[in-house]
Length: 398
Image (cartoon, rainbow, N blue to C red):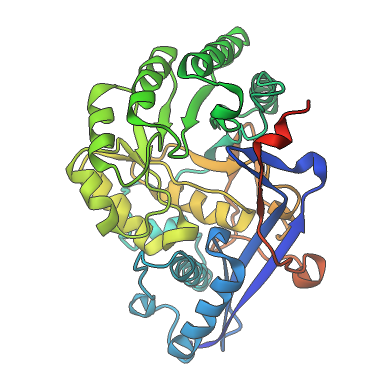
């Protein structure tokens, strides 16, 4: 079996005004998608989604550059997989897409789901069969405005409980300085949120993503109160490069401190492992690929660190991350962006079944899905930024 071609589908869909979401100082106006397609002379095609944060057109260019090195090679040979090098996001996202598409081919050739292949090949440390279904958590909290109605966050959380999810991750809301938000005011909303969730009587976990927006002086009291409220984890509270700050926070509280979604190699995670700066690491298969993702997971296991992957954007990347979770020795959650819009699942002919907050991995081999027809005609790529800056003046009149 030989690879005959590699290509990238670059797709977009504008959000309707009511679907646009915002947080910090930006508003997201469209959804993007980059899908790597690898074809072989045996008629087996591999597909995978590269994280669109790398820029679909830039990802496409990197895939084109790698094509001459891969055409004619056996897709079952793991030595042909390019390596992420963490110097270029677009490069590593392209490599991740290539890697996951090759795993899709290997699974199809073996007649097995990727998660099963990860276990049987020894890529994973899991001894048992992969789990199925895979628990999802609803990831959003990106529509509450401190100058308008921050309690929208509570309504949103309750809606996810009603949909059957068992957990939610939220963000910090719009820029705090615009409306004089303090740590105390923020924690007041967190207390109201936790109380509203408890009042439902339904077990439901909450987690907070700080998006690296806080100082260590702000993050510590927030971490302590989130711990008291029973939050599941506190993600990326401070700038990522402050390893010592993360180590101090992790040592000061019992709530897990997490991060690393942008990291694409074991080497990037090593200082955090060694300094006990992360209690949970969050690699993304659309950013680092399944091969490196499994290496990161094995190193995390050695250091006693849990793994919950980051997962944003669309359904094909969600499936790669779900297969990854299913093959972990101690699987926990897979993130699901619940505000991506129709593009998320419309890229697939038959989306996987999601029930009661869990994704049922398809029985079909590989990643288990096929692309919908005529995607480039249905969702032509729209140039321009996916997010637009929002200024304080935009929030003065409400």
